[in-house]
Length: 233
Image (cartoon, rainbow, N blue to C red; front, side, top):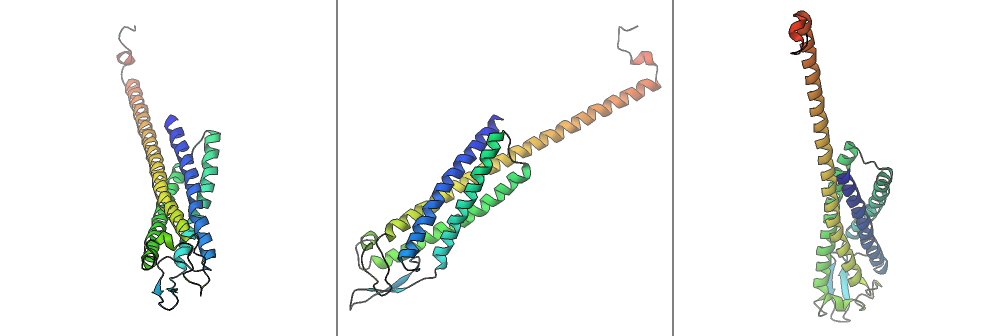
């Protein structure tokens, strides 16, 4: 029971952290798309014009930003559901079943894959954008707040902080979900050990019952005096 409580409390704490980190993905990415008029800077390139110093952007697909927002919302919902579910288990003094623990393992592995893909998109896509910005500015951070694309009417005030926050949230979420996957695997292994113990105890009980039955049949067919323990007359 002590190990069960430790794993359950660890899972609750992990889902709370995952819940907070999911907000760090959804909020800045949503603000970014609003400020960039629906455009996504991830993997976007362009050419700096010599005439007016503006950046003629070749916008990449919005799917990059939409995917990261979708992953963040999915993590938000799953974390909230799991926090409630695990809290109810802890409050009632029970725990999930073997099947439920198995589903948690599979779901967590799937979410880990989705999160690491989103994190790589944000990191690599932001590097591509920053490479374009550093062709004119000394650093990508300096480009934040500059009017670099008046034609599209984008607001670059907070893109550096927003992308940095989303990048942190994505990689930290991946690490958190890896930890949650480990907890779920440990719980699944514990259930497997308990099941093996139950099977072993059942087999041992059946062996003892069968042994006692055979001894009884032998005593009924032979002389009862030979079946009596020594010292009994």
